[in-house]
Length: 314
Image 1 (tube, rainbow, N blue to C red):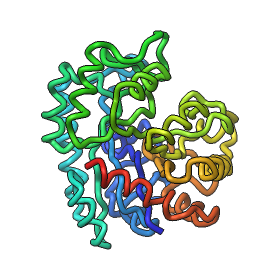
Image 2: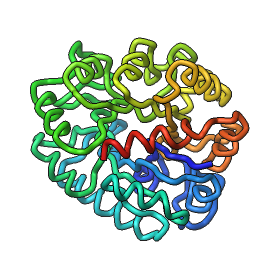
Image 3: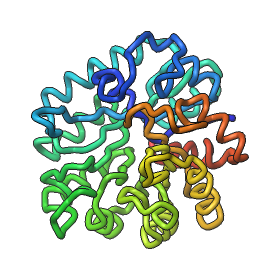
Image 4: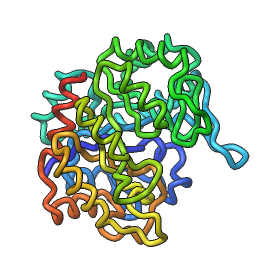
């Protein structure tokens, strides 16, 4: 089985592993008490992943946006770390994607960013593109001057600056990710953005009523527009109860396969939440890949839908 993961928060692990309840260690060493590492990825069949830079820091019991200058520093440090391991190779174009697919020993990394609060001008988009960013998550859980997030108290989506920013993104071969965007922002994007967007790590609200899970109106619009949903392992997307029910991942997969088979993929969000022992069969990447085999997940869900989508976008 090959896996294409639309959302892997490797930069969070690199920078703040203590937030994840994981020990930072050599990534070539297997450790089942973290969400993944090179041996687990290789055994699992991970072939491509969108690795996101998380442009926030924790201060005085709250998350705050970093500056553009600080983002550039984080990006450089992360690239130096991740690409110091020869198994990881950057994906910046369609040709990179195709060529890496032929190389069984390499894992392609598509650089992304989760939240654009740090961008002090829409004109920065082209600079970030030149630095290798190919996936732009409009929001995390904090509103920006460009758009509102899932946590917003506001009644609008894109601002005037946000519309201009979207036009800048539309001119480039990049992916827009709406995983943490408000319903207002999502509707605005569906209205003005001519290309397809992704929801990289979400679930189905009809099965688990969690704010990051998608309602049927959004799911139907994604299908109509030709977008992509990355089903996530985020605990709250699987269960609102104390005990996590991984079988809700299977229920969401089968539900979406029935109504939108070509619009679903994987977006684990591993390294984006704390390590939890109680997520039986989904504590780490190796367990997760074995679970995919157990539920007989098909190759389009696990790999080809995302691969085909990105091949058209890059």
